Image (cartoon, rainbow, N blue to C red; front, side, top):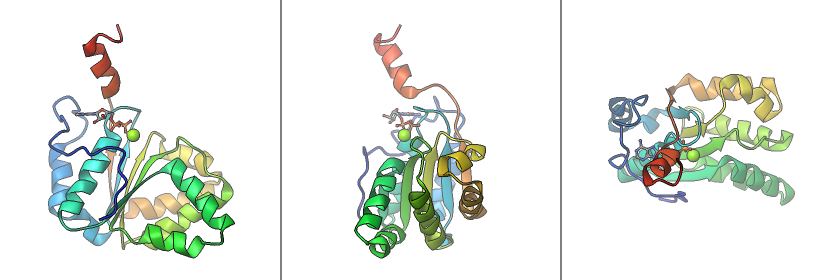
Length: 189
Ligand code: ADP
Ligand code: MG
């Protein structure tokens, strides 16, 4: 039951009436059919502040409620950890760690670029988990930008191919919820 979430926010705390580009039913259907069982992945795509991380955490919490394990890692932390594992000759241990949890959240993929080594390691993690574990990925990048992000179009294609084979993609639109809260509080005019 390991999880290092940035915050604990549930599905009931998510206001679907202000975020109309996400179907609550689609999310709830995934949870009620235990999406992770057949290695189904969830991609939450969209600009900053639209609720991607909130939803990722909330879905993982539901899986934990169903008795599963979940691990949360921000993409830049993953890159750092991968580098460290290489330096310390602990790649096998690293891969095992990221293969183990039923649900792996990779948050904010795209903000930090991958170097060649960490891109390779990401490919290995995705391959190892393919059809066995579930990945929840949040990103502000479109698929066409994954090549630049990973420093290789070939690798990006191979990763996306596996990720998307069994997946539900949510293209989330709208204004930042953070900004909305600030505007309401009168902090931002
Ligand atoms: P993103 O990961 O897309 O940048 P977050 O999930 O971190 O955005 O959301 C930013 C903040 O706004 C969080 O505190 C989150 O709980 C809140 N938030 C975003 N959308 C909603 C929503 N529809 N209902 C309730 N809270 C929301
Ligand atoms: Mg986020």
